[in-house]
Image 1 (cartoon, rainbow, N blue to C red):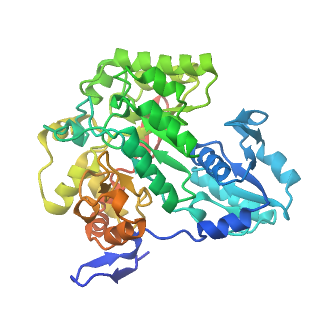
Image 2: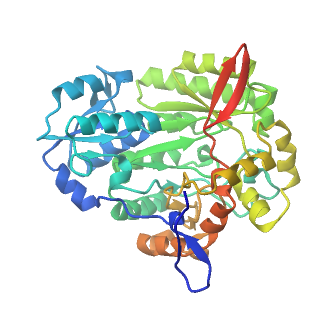
Image 3: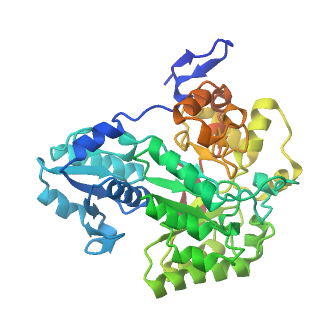
Length: 443
């Protein structure tokens, strides 16, 4: 299908319409009017569902229940959970409002169709999170990282130079403005390039998210434990713990990190959760390389089951900032990243060639905006350290409307998408297994 293009600036650069951030089909005010007095149900106890339950509660509304067969009969985050089949048997078309929060594309289609066939109407009493809010913001609470991963920009020489952490005071300023401008944002990532557990204010920051009715996610390499316990006791909603193999292979992927520290961190997360009956999700994002598909993966699957965590295999790639410079501007990939390519399942050039075949597809992270850096600037793209929106304007002093206008008027996304780089870091894959052989297939 041909992507429609439109000239939106006088420089002559033709910008793709699908490179722009767009408003949600239903405004916050209209949704809140539609939801007033309704029995609100949220399908899936995931980060979006948890976040919406928190946000709606902060806005004076009560969620009747989550729909999720995995936790039916339990109470999660203070809300009852029922089986979806049970819900559709008791559906009240005059009084119910259902939000389908699952991120799984297949299940999303299934439940939207089932809900519509049951009489619920899209944009009236049937919604997805994207119907009411197109923003998935990030606030980078830590600019520095303690590792030098070869596939990441933070593994390049002098990557930490001039970077620091966000104070709790600055965080609350940024979050307050964000919630004023995006009242129905359902969740918040607290990381981009730095290691969040280096920030001494991390527990205060997580508690502030709860106080403001926002679900938060933190990704950590688990190599630095000084603030780990107080962070866990603040009860973040979702913890992501990336892994690139076991033992020496873990330490190769997480350069400068310790497998023993990582393993101890996982056990500590499980221990604190169990001891204090805390309700947070833990995901091990397992980065697939060509030599960690068997024993290492099996070990991590068993460990995640033992600890009560989920494990999601994703394909390892070089981060796309340097790939953009290579594909668009012809700059060489740094040598340290070239070295990492040896163990990637899909090589740099193979992945770029594949992405060229789907360059007309949507960008899967275009709605991850605004991404606010540790010093209150705004990144154009959450996956790249440059450029900064407006050359580095302060988020606190610039309206969201102006930030979007500056971002949408830039040729950066169009250049990225025309070269397929926007699909380069799409890490979703499946593992096909036949006769003991495992093959990684792009989705």
